[in-house]
Amino acid sequence: MPLVNMLDMLKHAHANRYAVGAFDLVSLDFLEGIMAAAEEMQAPVILSLAESHFEYYDFELIMAATVAAARRASVPVAIHLDHGESLESVTTGIRLGCNGVMVDASHHPFEENVRITREVVETAHAAGVPVEGELGYVPGVEGEDAEKHPGEIRYTTPEEAARFVAETGVDFLAVSIGTVHGRMKGEPKLDFQRLKEINERLGIPLVIHGGTGLSEDQYRQLIANGVTKINYYTALSDAAARCIAANVAQDVKGYTAQVKGAREAIAAECRRMIRLWGSEGRAQEVLKAARPWREVAHVIVYNVEGLNEEEAAELRAEGRRVLSRIPGVRAVETGVAIQPDDPQFRYVWLVRFCQPQVIATYRDHPDHVRFADERFRPVAGNRITIDFELDE
Ligand code: 13P
Image 1 (cartoon, rainbow, N blue to C red):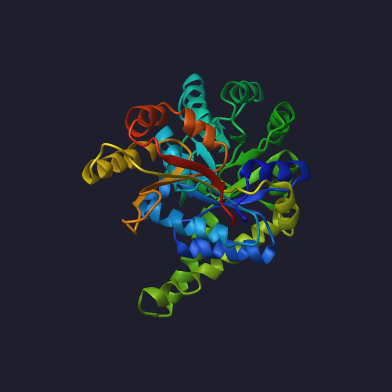
Image 2 (image 1 turned 90 degrees about the horizontal axis):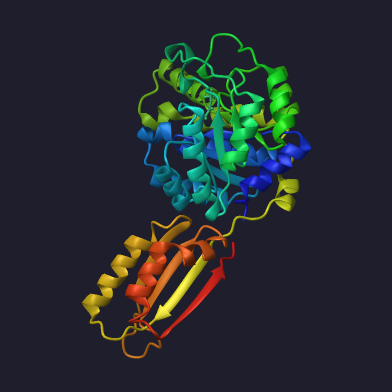
């Protein structure tokens, strides 16, 4: 069960003035280290997967592990697509199990950012998935030296932020008030007055990117002014890399021996931040306040008239192809009864939705309407359709 609605999770943090760590993961060591820390600290946590890191892992494979880790957790977990680059990435992220998504169009001019973000909001909200947008520009690259990517910080203004939220409908806003992604020399100067004004105007959970390298006091001031999600990666990466370097320095040989201890180094850094950001010990409160994120199985058992076995198989293949692209659909599985002689129904569709709101979205989606009206219903008059909310 501990996959929970991310909007509810962050609203709880906003109302109770603490921040949830959105820790970017790039391997199983990260996933296990982050989850071990969250469990130990009894903290809500966001497992974050940045599109800029997709060159280092297979997104589909790591998502299977990430969803499994969330499902077996005792603490509340959300899974977030970080820095999604397009509507297509967002739809893929939701299909693979993300229950919060970011679209980062912050490098575009304001109107273009609004247009791209609004399109993503329409699609994600139709699947019940909350959206983070970014306004202003936070330069740098996660995990690298900030000075290697010396883009200009573009600060978020309170007026533009209010317009952006009203015009796009985003649920959380990533703001630029002086942080940069990656490894910095010294402490950045943050514009807390600006943050305060943005928070007072918007009243929605705010997000800080480039969480690495701030002082304890800076984190405290961020949280006091509406920041409820802190994106954090470089410090985790550096903690793991230091551990590996120490192993290598001791002349340890082989992959498993050289990465030994990296998971615990990541967990230790997560624990330090969870304590500092006030999410320690909040797990039970969040579990009470946040709606569980439950999948739905849309099941149809049916017979066909006027199609031979080959044509029936083609129909199923077409359905898998067309229907699995509809936003909010996690999977479309099909099958044929094992006992051929005596089944009441010969065929099955098992369509998994990411949550109950998708029942209506799917029913009315033009691709579904077309497939159902033109291809399926004319040959499958004999059928039963039921939506099941799945047990944990
Ligand atoms: P750092 O790598 O600076 O911690 O930033 C992480 C981040 O903002 C991911 O979106």
